[in-house]
Length: 149
Image: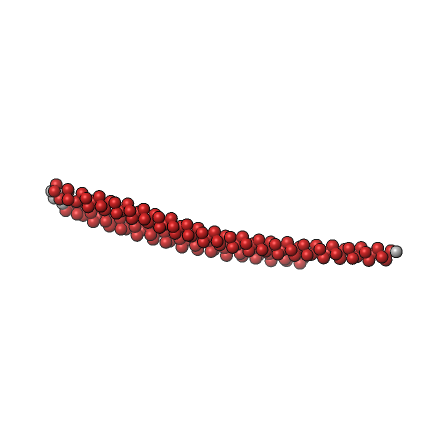
């Protein structure tokens, strides 16, 4: 009985350790992805803001209507570039997030496979113990039956 309890405690401790290790791996992958995504988005925002402020600076220096007409296409070009940069960054963020989620899925799959293997091993051990106990009981029963004859 005590041996079974120790075996259970060892299995529980092992499973808990594996879960903690897996959780740490998943957290590390998620945080790495979040850091990369944040960096990409901040770089895109910085470029967009710099382009917009540069345009506003040119706009503030313009003193006549002809200067405004000349800047209008430049403003449209900056707006288009900012939108393209934002879309491109969003696509890259999505791609990186998908890769991170795939990596997290692989970690979870590995954990599930290890847990399944441990459960199968424990079930096989129990099955072997039951078979041995059954065989021992059968032998004892047969020996007791022979002694009575």
